[in-house]
Amino acid sequence: DWTSEQFVESTVAGLQEQLGNDKVVLGLSGGVDSSVAAMLIHHAIGKNLYCIFVDNGLLRKDEYETVLDSYKHMGLNVKGVNAKDKFYAALEGLKDPELKRKAIGRVFIEVFDDEAHQIEDVKWLAQGTIYPDVIESLSVKGPSATIKSHHNVGGLPDYMKLQVVEPLKTLFKDEVRLVGKTLKIDDTILGRHPFPGPGLAIRILSDVTPQKVHILQQVDHIFINNLKKTGLYDDVWQAGAILTPVQSVGVMGDERTYEHVVALRAVTSVDGMTADWCRLPYEFLADVSNEIINKVKGVNRVVYDISSKPPATIEWE
Ligand code: XMP
Image (cartoon, rainbow, N blue to C red; front, side, top):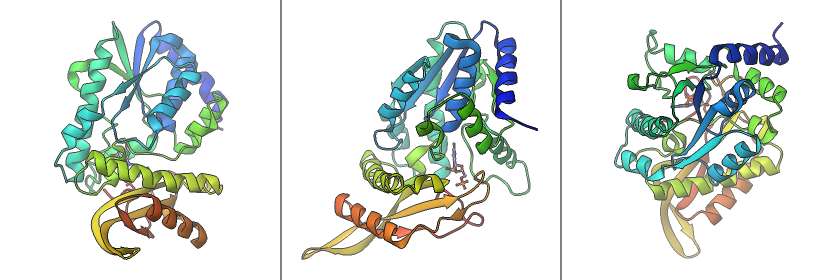
């Protein structure tokens, strides 16, 4: 039978053998997968692991600062890189979801590559790829065709000439969390909902601007904060908000308004391959909706997504 203790023991030993005294570079995302991969490798090779955490300007509100701090507390050798403007510039005017993903993937590789080149004699690239990522990427070749390009798989440019190490490749999400627990990673990181690599860009339908990111960050923050305050956060597999390009008429005092519609999405799932919408309490939804409309300028209507996957997907793009 699989146990996380055994997995950690044999994986750390295997990594020590495989990596020896080589230097390894890893991109942290703030998520569970890259954090657990980093700690596994950290246990095996310590300071020879160089972590890079890129602020792509598409993260949740305050996430960059908070997460960078917690990585430093974990003893990781981590460098934060603010590259927001590069991502916004590459996204300017792009409306198609796949073009947005490609632009983000391309800029990420550029930024990451620049940083990696500053590490003398680095030999390996570590990634937090987990089993479902591998499967969804393989489906490109299957009869079901590409659904979405997951840029965190196979996105390595040839010229980097780094060998790839992916210690979580055989695991499902719940197993990754167990491994993280065994490694004593903080619950605030382990319990985090999954968050897509392209971040809020694929929750802003149509083109992305810094202003839209700002609106969505506030909306998302209110939703997630209320989930945490009411203790519902851990019952939900993934939650977030979507900024639609739809504007609708509303009324505020004596004034007619014409502003954005946002959607809230919360799902239950085991591994993200299938999902059902969460039956969140009406009272909870009412409170969140009121708070959003009262506090966030530019939003006058909130809807709740009641679609399951399939046939819908978790993200809207
Ligand atoms: P979908 O929308 O395909 O999402 O039902 C399933 C899971 O994958 C995440 N997701 C992504 N993750 N890059 C990522 O790293 C992406 O392009 C991407 N698209 C979707 C999504 O958030 C959910 O957890």
